[in-house]
Length: 316
Image (cartoon, rainbow, N blue to C red; front, top):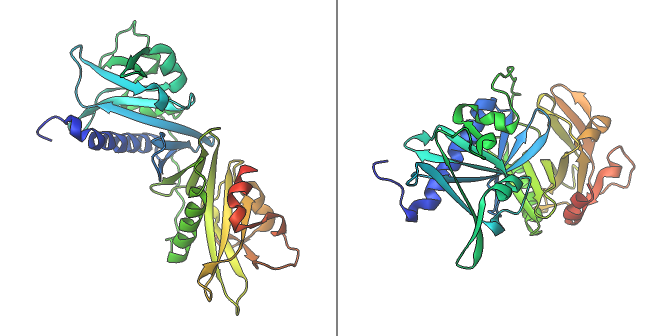
């Protein structure tokens, strides 16, 4: 980059900073911090899943590409954009090929408590500044961190034990079709914000966050194919990547190949209950499912109408 970023390029520079931030968190944590990105922009730039203790951390990222006259990153945020007191506001300096040596990581409630509140064109706005060499008397010092230790502000120590990543199955077209259908259904509820992981490193592949409560659920979506000649199918979950959690659920869909549509029934199974209905078959936890069957089986308590998936998730 030969010239500084211009005001017209602010969106592009912000995106560059975000991807450098996600890369830093993934690299420093060796994948223990797993980044989920939003499918629609509704204020939160990412949800970072701390896999060590199953905590989901909403993140807003803001950057500057130049320092102000005092040699500081001058950070400004509209008051109405800071809607989640528990979200982490992460800010830094975008530099040529990287980021500056010091970054700010602060919960939004503390940012609003410590930043200067003023108005701009009649709208309330918060502002603050921090330098690349923080002063010892700065009120922001507890929230400033060397970029080399960024993951520590997310609860991950720099000294990590090796984490064995499970082997992954390649997704086929049917699996992607099921994921797209669940995304479409949940997108009908404007109170839900959907996040997708890039890449897929864990049981959860889609994260659902309620905009009002901030509650987060992780979903893994499985799809089987059935038809009139073969009315049931086998649902399989890779055992090596399975990690049960109170906040993780499985959504099972059935694609009716002969009718080119999804069955009206789905399964919504808490991950903690999967071991009670699935058996280990080779490298997978598996069970059989006959959509629409009236026979009582271990999956019966988890049957739902696909059209009621949103309300079923609200009850989880």
